[in-house]
Image (tube, rainbow, N blue to C red):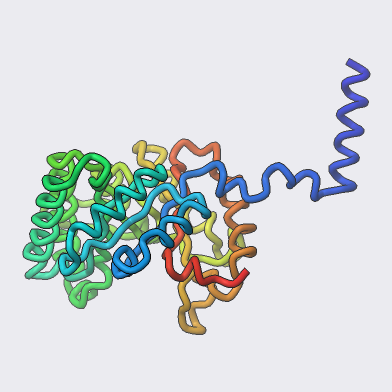
Length: 300
């Protein structure tokens, strides 16, 4: 026992003297040990350079791609791209949604997506099929939200329930993006009264928190601080939670929201801290980077 204690003391002294040794085994482990997802909005890329996109996804250990649905592109391009992704152990989810989906004409937009996806899945081979649906419908961006909050939230709830059922029918996983502050929003609709984030946790079992900050932790609220409340709800309701960060160029007032200015190396360091903090959390499913093109163009 005495020898063991002496050995532990020596190791501790070495790690304190050479802190880089302590981090050597954890460097970039967020990329190696967690599920990474990203959004691919520019569908022209699966037409013009699919192999290049696949290579960069593989090089960055991306396992899930949220791919925008574009009904102006021939479905063969989707089939070819998803087939190549599948061959590289990358799952592709059908991506769509906008604040207009909870407007008066929102049902038409929703139905157009469902029709396209249903027809596509029927026509696709096993290795060409989407693995899930991922929707980015942000009701608070709807023009009527401030004046008619509960009305818009009720349409949002109806949309969630509709796609929950539709995803089950198509045998696809259903996931959505949510803002980090949804835990602070309440609703009073035909679905009852309560907290929006908690209601969502009861309906959707895969959610991505848009925890858009450029530091893992800081006094004003970093990624860890602003995602904490919803991660607690995810753990309570057994939701698979992804922590998302932003890489796009924004205006000067919102620089703290994105890693665009800081670059790739800084983002890697901050996400490593996020990973180490959440890796043992039962609700933590992975890290999402918004979005593919801006991420790939980031400076080191």
